[in-house]
Image 1 (tube, helix red, strand yellow):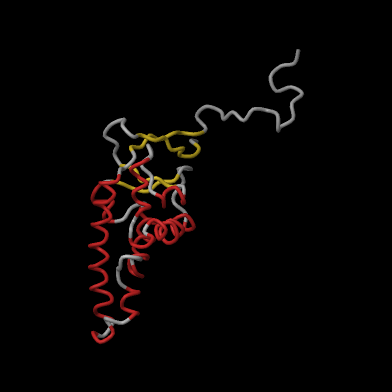
Image 2 (image 1 turned 60 degrees about the horizontal axis):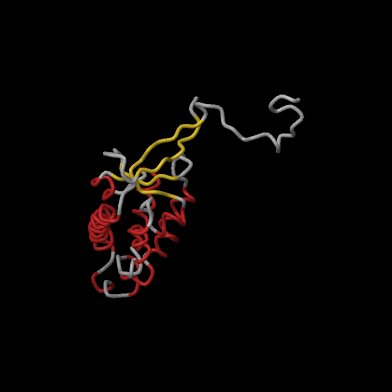
Amino acid sequence: MTGYGENMTPEQEPAVAPPDETKLTKYRAAGFWIRLLAFLIDLMVIAGLNAIIWGSLLPIATQPSFLYQVLHTNILFLGLTGAAYFILMTRYFQQTLGKMIVGIKVVQRSGEPLSWITVIFRELVARSLSQIMGLYLGYMVCWFNAEKRCAHDFLSDTWVVYENPMGDSHCILIETGQVT
C-alpha cells in the first residue's frame, strides 16, 4: 500500500492549500438603494466638476453644440468628466466620493487591488452596458441575486461591499491573497 502522494504525478495530486496560506475576508454586499444614493451623489459631483472645468474653458456659444453634449452628463453616458472621475477614483481609492460618503467600496474576487484593466473595463465598457439606452437596466440585476451585483459587476468580476460590515446578512467571502 502506498502512502499519500507517492507514485502520483503533479497533475494527480490534490490541490490543497496549506492552512494560513490564504485568508478569506467577510464583506457585507451593498444593495441597490445604497448604491443608488452613492451614484446620485456622484452625479452631483460630476455636474459640479463639469460646471467648473468645461463652463470656464468653453465659450458660451459652444455650449449647445455636440462637443458640449459629449463632454457633459447625459442619459446615455456620463461624459468625459464622469468617465475620468469614475476611473480615477475607483482605481486609486476603490470608491468614488459618493461611495465614500455612504461607506461602500469596490473589491474584486482575488482580493488584489483593482487593476487599471479591471477599472477601465468596469467603468467604461461594463457600466455603459448597464446604462444602455438610458434605462439603467443593468443596475436592476442587483435586486435579483444574493451577492447584490449589478451587470457591470458580473462583467468585471467585482463586488460593491460595505467598508464596515454591520451584520451577517448578505455577506460574501473574498479571498484576500497570501498571508506571510
